Amino acid sequence: MTNIPFAAAGGLVVAALLTGCANQGQPPASTGTAAPPAPGGICNAQPAQSAVGQNSTASVVESARVRSGAQMARILRPGQIITKEFDAQRLNLEVDGNGRILAVRCG
Image (cartoon, rainbow, N blue to C red; front, top):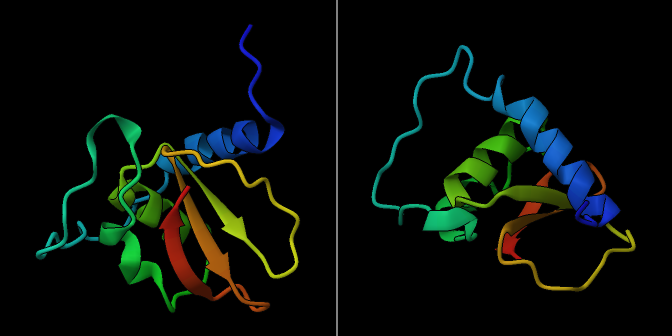
């Protein structure tokens, strides 16, 4: 059995749970001129920049993850201890103390 770090496993579980509910009752997202998500689950943060300034609700996080093409997303809260390894398949959402998204980046 493959060893998956606890944070990654938790992210996969959250992503799996949210996938079924992500777009219920919402119109399709506009593609505009944003770059398309990278193939193969490799994160591209540019298409997910529209999440900056929004509250980090489950639907906003999942929408950003899908737009980025990442396989998983994590929320980085102020003062939170995090792993520093780079994961090209992960989207990081930095939030303030109120849960408002301040930055979107891959890794």
